[in-house]
Image 1 (spheres, rainbow, N blue to C red):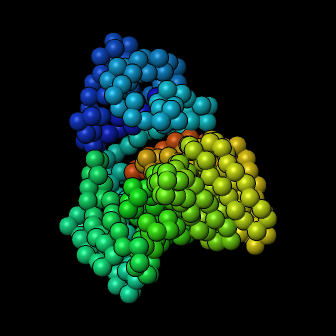
Image 2: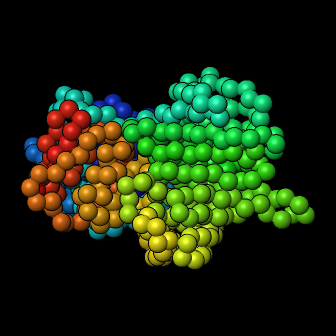
Image 3: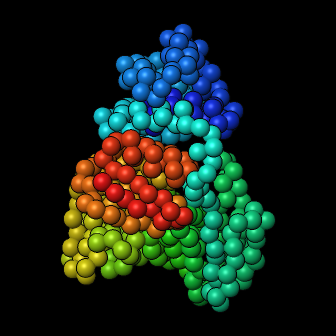
Length: 388
């Protein structure tokens, strides 16, 4: 998360009464610096959005806020990867452009903020091997099965997690977790591996999972695979089966985007090592690389270096756009907000960059994109038309 974005986000949450205790402490500590406190009053008292925006553009917040955050989040930072902490410590030009326009939210009437389409939530359904469907919306959900136990519990952040603790290596059949548009969910498997499912995604696992660590994925999932020893310390592989190819790992973190409508399936490695096996051959990835496999059936593998934040931030609650087209942005938005997207006139060819919370309502997100003066939106019910 960029520093100027964070300031604006905290001020907006304060205005709308949405600050939690940790965020209130973060804002209070930032305001303890006299220079920051002076800017805060100027922004709150600005007569117009343009005036406030100009003040923020001229203000160097990086040093002040980084020092404050360094003092109050040392313990929390130690739990994060270097890549995640970079979001607080660094500011790219693309992110700055998106961050600056967020100041407009401080001056938007409250009634405009509430009358829009809400962001997605944690929701999914479990389909058992006999076709029985179990909604995973209740923390009391628990299913006893001959192959093991399935339950839902709250993680440290209060989000629901589905956990399967099967231990019967002789059970047959598969279970499937499905998220709808506007939904996401966290799944924990018997080996301790965790998968975060994005909207409109499907993950299937065998009931004898410990005997053969294999899952099937459609849609998008972020994987944190745990190492598991078998005979004489040999590590058991973990395999993700996709359309036309597979990803095999021993213990690592990676993101897979395998929506059916995409021309290519993307596997992005965050840490560790993964092997991509397709019809055209095999490729080994190192952290920071992405493998793209064509969905046309050729099985060709193309490997490139990428900014992994673009493919990992969604599970932390953010959209990170790294100079991508409006069509690619709207694909992400459509699944998360469960909307239909249409285009009128000439589709803008400009690229967009920035980082925005996935928990803003839809209208706020569209307003931010419109302030780039590159694109305009018309919202009718759950249909959004994109115009130049």
